[in-house]
Length: 75
Image (cartoon, rainbow, N blue to C red):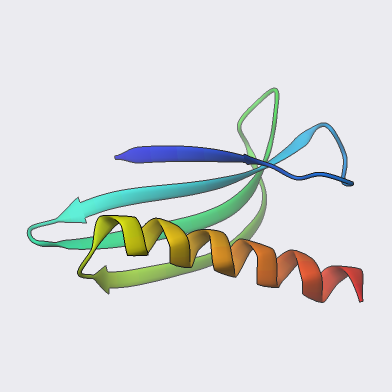
């Protein structure tokens, strides 16, 4: 499992975005969450993506969905 932490500028310094990429045979699954910085506990579950064929594209899609989720909460 690859875990990527993403700083959430303008939000609480106690929260961070997390995109986890898990390989399943030749495909990749992505879990997108907002977690607490100190404990790592999930503050908000954003999305799960299944069966992405490319690892880099899976990461890009995870970041895109995190951004889309955050933008929907600001407006």
